[in-house]
Each structure stands twice: as C-alpha cells, then as structure tokens.
Length: 310
Image 1 (tube, rainbow, N blue to C red):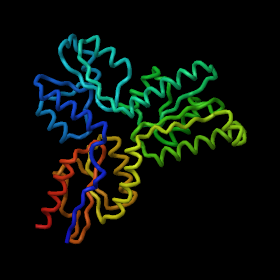
Image 2: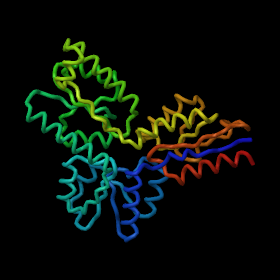
Image 3: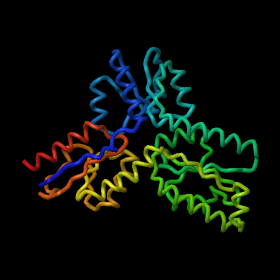
Image 4: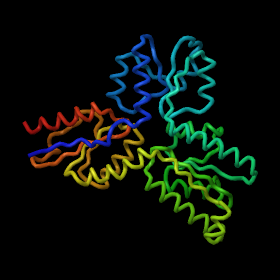
C-alpha cells in the first residue's frame, strides 16, 4: 500500500519565517505593504500573501517612484546593498528590514575583510561562491561596491583565473552564498587551494603561514545540516516529490541533491503538477521542499498523493 511521509526538516528557514511573519503583522494593521523583490520564491505563498495586500516591487520600479512618503517597504531575507537603502530612504519609504541575521553577519564580514585588504595594500581579492545575479549575492557584492569576483562553479573559477580576474599569486578571501551546497563549496575551495599551491610553488606550511587563502565558513548552519538530512530522507524512500518554486536557487540545489540520491525525484511547484502515473501501489513516497516552501503546501501535496490510493 502506498505510504506518504513529509520531511520534518523541510519548509521555511528561520530567515524566511521571520520575513513572512513580519509581513503578516504589518498587513494585519491595514494599508499597503511593498516587498522589494518576491518575499519568497514560491508562487503559491506569494498568491496567499498577495490576497492580504502584499505587492512586490523590483529595483526598476523603485527608481521610477517619485514619492512614497508613508508607504512601507519590506527588505526580504536575502538582503540588499547599501545603495538600495539610500534610494528607498530618498523616496520616502518606511523601511522594514527583514534581512536574515545570518546574511547580515556575512555582509559585515565582507565589509570588514575588504577594509582589511585596503589597509594591507597587498592587492588581496574577495571571491564569492554563489549564483550570479542572485539577490543575496548582489547584496553581498554591493557591500564593497562590486569589488568581488562571483563564481558559480569550479569551471567558472578556472575561467576567472584564465581571464586574469583572479590572480593566484595574491591573497584570496573566499566566501559563500549562505544557501549553497557545503560539499560543493568545500570541493571548490580545495581546488582553489591546490591551484594556488601549484602557481606559487610554495609548500603547504609556508602557504598556510602566509595566509594566502582564507576560507570563510558562511553557509547557514540550518541549510548545511539540511543537506545531509535530506540526502538520507531521499535515499530512504522509493520516490521523492520535491516541492519548490522553479526560480528558487536553494530549491534547485536541494532538488539536485535528492535526485543524486534517488533517481525517482520529481520537482513540482504546485499540486496541479502531480501525475498519478509516477506512483506505484507499494511506493513509500517522500515529500520535501526548499527553504522557500511553506509547510501548508507540503501538507497539501501529501494529501493529494494519498488520494491516489482511494
């Protein structure tokens, strides 16, 4: 008989919960509330909040607004660069800052590290492992006026070295987007270290003593532990239904993780995408999702799958 389990570790992360709770509290007071960018990469949740009065603006919308005195603008968990706060303030918005505390800490670390590089004057470089164009990454790079090299993979890192954007003979400080795969980050940092050792010709002890490469552990601990737990969840079920918005960076990473542990992994963003032919009568189904997937949607998907048994 078909069984359905919901992953107890899936669903909103603490940062997203904080942002949505804050939005709901403000919406309950009446009036309008704007979010700079989608508060979460999930269409169903955006529709739910939209019915309560939440509207999304993008940076182009923000720049075109003439005056917004008395209007509220929510900064989502991804965070924003300093320039965004300045523009919103000049427009007259009341800013409600819901940047995730983990992201705020990372932003501060990048600013301080860049200041140290300037003080040293040794031409040190900041590299960020993250998705090019992602809101969090834009906010991180914006902390230092774009003076960071963003790479999405080992191949992109190699290309940046070949193009001369990264100099392996100079100090490198590397950070990661908070929602990246910790295993992939470790592999990329190991590759970079080995490439620097080959280029500089230094032995490992002198290389480390010189501080040529500083790897900053900036992946959210909640996200990092979720990877190992989700891998076990995926491998312990016969089929996985992964629920998240298709635009979610974290969703893509976690879905690929599930698929690497269970070839029968299907990525959906709503119950309408479920297909009964995917399931076998004796399947043990696992339903899971990204940090942007609401718990109510996971429950809804599980309930729809259980109806296939009736």
